[in-house]
Length: 249
Image (cartoon, rainbow, N blue to C red):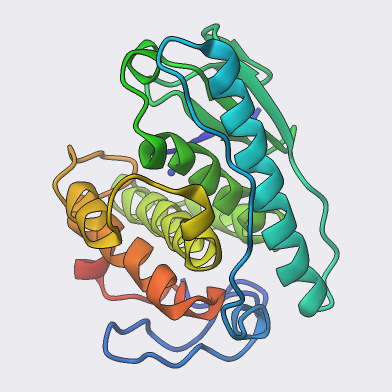
C-alpha cells in the first residue's frame, strides 16, 4: 500500500511537470498543463456553515460543505482544461483508523490508492474551532487529489523509490508544497465564502510561524507557496518541481 499523504503533505516526468524554475518575481502563469488549468480568478460562492464549539455534527457539516466547495472549484478547472475529473471520496471520522491505516496526528490525510480524503475530528477543534485551520484540512488534501488525477503522485513515487534519503526528503517537500500552492489557488476564488475569521496576511504569518515538519518542510516555504497560489490564482504558479532548493527545503 502506498503511504498516505498528510496535511500541516525533477524536471522530467513524461512531460507532465514544467521545465522553467518557479520564481517569486515571475507572476506569469507557466505554460503547459499547469498553465492550461489557469485563467482569471472567478469568485465562487460556497455555503460554508458555522461551527458550534463542542458539536461533532457541526464540524461534519463544515467539512462536507468545504468538500462540496472544493469539488465544484476543481471540477470547473479541469473542465476548462479539457481534462477528465472525478471527486475523491471523503471520510470524516472521530476514530484513529482509516481506509489506508492509522490516521496521522495532524488529523487529515489523502489515501492515493483509495482516492479518499480522510479527516479525523480532533478534540482541540471541538474545543476551539478555528475555521481557517479546519478548512485547510480539506483544501490541502484536495491538492493531493489534484496531483493524483494529473499523474504527479505516480511520477513522484517513481522518482522517490530509487532516491537516497536526502533526495527523498526534498521530493516529499516538493509534493507537499505544491499541495499547499493548490490550496492557495482554491482560496483565491473561495476565501470570502469560507469566512476564515482571520485576514489572509495574518493567516500566512501563522503558517510561517508553525512548527517545522520533516515531511512538509520549512513553514516559511509552505507559507510562500500557499501565498503564491493565492495571489497567482492559477495552478501555473505552483511548479515546485524545479524550484530552487531554498524554496522547498
